Structures are given as C-alpha cells and as structure tokens.
Image (cartoon, rainbow, N blue to C red; front, side, top):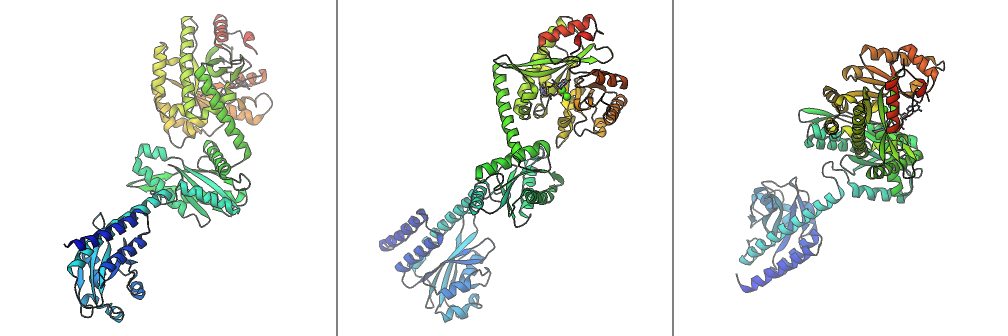
Length: 613
Ligand code: C2E
Ligand code: CA
Ligand code: CA
C-alpha cells in the first residue's frame, strides 16, 4: 500500500473512532464514515445498512444515495436474491455486482436502481462479535464496474469500523435497557418506577400505589430451586403486565413489585384494582414437570389521601403491605393511619428489646399452672420481662409487637432458654419438683430450623432433662404459615421428647383436622373464652365444653388461661378442666417469688388460699 493511501485510511479511522468515543449517535458515526470515504474515493456512493435480529435491512447511513432508494430498501428481508446487500447478508460473504442491468440478483430491484442512475454495487457483510451478520457496507457506482485496489482497502477498514461502532451501540442500548428494565420479567425496574411515581405526582391526577409481595418465593427457591423461583417471578410479572391498561407494574425487588393504578380516587377503587391483580396473579405456574402455586399479598396507598409526595406514599403502601403480610396473607390491605402508629410502636419495641437484651435486662418471670381441683402447682409458664433502669418491670405485652421481627424473637428465645434452664436447675437442686416450664416461641424461632438443637445444647449445659420444657406455640404460628414447616418442626421436636403446647387455642384458625394430623401435648384455652365463663354466657360455655371434649378424645392435656374469678374457676371445674393459670392463683412473679410459691405448694399442695390473688 502506498503511504498516501495509508494516511487517507488513517484519517478515516481516526475520525470515526473519535466520533464513537465522543458518544455520537450511531447514524451520525455512519454518516461521518461515508463522508470521509467518499472524499477519498470520489466516484463511490457509500451505503451502510443494519441487519436486525429478524433478518431485515434498515438504512443507517447513505448520504449521497438518492433518499428514494434508501426508502425502498427499508425493512427488506435478506435473501438469496435481494440485490447486492440483501444477498451479501444472506450468503455471509461479499457480493460484487458489476452490472445491475443484467445481474439476476437485481432482477426484482433493478428498475428503481437504474432509473436513479445506479449501475453497479459491491456489498460486504459486517459481522458482530458473535459471528452473526449485523450489517452491510456497500459501494454504489454510476458506471458498470468493479472496485479499485484503493477502494478495496477502504472497504476492509470501513467494515471493521462499522462492526466496532454497531457493537458499541448495541452494548450501550443493552446497558441502557438494563438500567431501566428488569431482565427477568421485562418489566420496568426500581429506577423506572421511581421516575413513573415522580411523573404521576407531578400530573396531580388521581392514582393509587399497590405493592405486591410474592409470599412463597423463599419456599419455592429452597425446596425446588432458584430456577423455579425465577419461573415464579417471571410468571407473576407477565400476569401483572396483563392486568389492564390502567395498571402498570414494575419489579422493584427480589419478590416485590410496585404497581401504579391510574384514575383511582378512593380506597374502594383501589380495592377493586387489587382484586383484579389478585385474580390475575394467583394460580398455578408450570416449572419443568412440576407446578407451583403463586401466592401474593398486596398493600396499597392512595395519592392525595395517604400522601402527596413519593416518600410518604411509598412508605404508607409499605405499611399496608407489611400489615397485610401479618394479618391477611394472600389478600389486600389498604393503608390506614393507625397502621403507621402500629408500625412505629413495633420499631420502638424492637429497639427497646434490642438494648434490653444487650444490657442483660431481660429476665423470665413465672406464672404457676395449677391443678384446678386442689390448686397445687403442676407447672410454670415463663414470661419475658424487662427490668428497666428505674426499677419498673415491663411486661411482654408492652414489647410484644417487637417479636414479629424474627431476629429479635430468635434472640429473646436464646436469653429465655438459658435463664429458664438455669432456674430449673436451681429448683431441682432444692428438691422442688414440677412437671414442666412453658416457654413461648414464635415464627422467628422456626425459621432457621435449629430450635431442637438450641434447646438440646442449652439444657445439656445446665444439666436439665428435656422433659422439663414445654414449648408454647400459638395457634397462628402453628397453622398460619403458607406451608407446613412449623407443624413439621413441631412433630420433630415432639419426637425428641420435647412437649409442645398449642397456645391461645380458639383464637385463630386451628381446625380439628389440623390437630388430628399434627397432634400436640397440651392445649391452652385462650383467655377470651375463660372470660366468658361464669357470666351466664351460654355460647362461651358451649365452646369451652367442646374444646375439653375434643382434647380428651385426642388424649391431650388442657390448661385454661386467664382465670381471674371464682365464678370462672367453678365453671371450669364443673366441666372437668384439669388445669389452669391466671390472676386467680397468681400473677407472673420473679424467680425468687416463684421459689417461694413452689416451696409452699410442696409443703401443702392443696392450700389454695395462699395463692389466691
Ligand atoms: P401468652 O403466652 O398468652 O401469655 C399469657 C399472658 O397473659 C401474659 O401476658 C400473662 O401475664 C397474661 N395473664 C396471665 N394470667 C392472666 C389473667 O388472669 N388475666 C389477664 N388479664 N392476663 C393474664 P404477658 O406476660 O404480657 O405476655 C403477653 C404475650 O407475650 C404472651 O402471651 C406471649 O405470647 C408473649 N410472650 C411472653 N413472653 C415471651 C417470650 O419469652 N418469648 C416469646 N416469643 N413470647 C413471649
Ligand atoms: Ca403462652
Ligand atoms: Ca396464651
């Protein structure tokens, strides 16, 4: 190659690469390339076409070709006989047509070309990094001829530059897409959603915001695998996309979607949209040969009513979702101001428990469980208390909401188990015997699957046999999950000889069929039923009688909770309820007080007077 040619080529190359580096639009880069080449090779007309994924041609740049011709080529499918370019892309090799008038490849297109003075065309395919044809680079001539040597070297360089520029552009738009779309569902991502929300607020027109959470994603990921989890997310995403024109969803987190509902001006309308979303998203999802059920929970907030800025609106929808997950899984909850109060209280309770545990202020108090016929103490229930720096003792009821945080609940159980085991050791050493001490556990304790191991380790450390502990699991924890993990864990615990009591029985939705499939050792009748006894409330009596009857048949022990009056005690004794606890016998008391009560009971098991409140 001559030095002059090299300088020319070098100039073209520099110009084009600079244009790419400066972030110029691809079409503009294409025009610069054509212009530079045409200046150095004055007798040619350059044309750059793009080939899309479906094999169709699109004009990128052809500054000197008649516009009419470029328009005619637009969206032409490549093929074995589609002029020079369409054929070059099809064959994946350069196609040189020195005479358009006679070449069969131009049979279908030669009329227009000739009328515009185009006589010859030499086209070369442009390859992408993956080897596919992403475009063509062509020289048109107004005479019937082939390329010169100089033109050949221009084409080599140009094709290379085109490949670079097109690939660069594709990467850019791919990244741009990644920045605004979620690749798994093809829905807008969190960044886009925030922009949508900002725009919706600016318009000041009514709309609602619904947050959606896939309930069982973790379960599906853990039990079937991440591919199944991905399939579930994708299916929910696609179903959300089909909910209607006024419902637009974005994926804002792993299992969370944010949905804007246009034209919603009151909570009834928002509820209506939520119902539509629920109806669309629920249902089976096929994953390979298996199918899984999509379970979702929704919370919503209304623009104007529940907030007029992005942050408040999103936060309130989040409160509503949180509330729905606690109380209404598989359903929808709209925001109400009192949810905010409950949330703030919960956060405060978590904070309080956190620091109390760190300071060692959490201690168990104990409430005796007695035989109703003679008031002898047969067991205890350990209840968490915080001894405040000012000496005041905070009861569990005050910080109970904090226990919905799984980490806090898990840590609290650790503190309680350790101190309870230590106290039991002291009582046993003092010759004070009883059947067992109840410890309350909750959802957070079951999530890591190490409950039995923890109890085993801690009780072994204090040398206390496992038969002294009874785990109190409340009904909604036992049956409330979206799977059987808690009942199965309970079954495993019982198989290891740990007693399990079903707490707050009658308040939730524990059904008899559940109890038959997953038996427990003790049923604790909730205080709300005890309350209705001895005041001539026939319905209350019927329920309690029925529970006692069922428990007897299923061979489970029964404890009535919250006995406060002689009247309640009388009815329960008459119905044959064997055990109970409540202020009528003793409030929960400190470990020292408990030791005294146990000693008194050991000396005179049937003396109830001392234990009366
Ligand atoms: P729970 O398990 O149903 O505990 C019984 C609650 O009723 C206790 O409230 C107790 O003080 C109260 N109580 C007992 N007898 C009577 C009575 O005759 N009348 C009335 N009005 N109340 C009575 P507390 O200690 O405030 O505990 C509230 C809840 O907090 C417990 O309900 C339990 O679910 C939870 N909790 C307490 N300690 C722990 C713990 O260590 N871990 C966990 N996870 N939860 C705990
Ligand atoms: Ca309990
Ligand atoms: Ca209870």
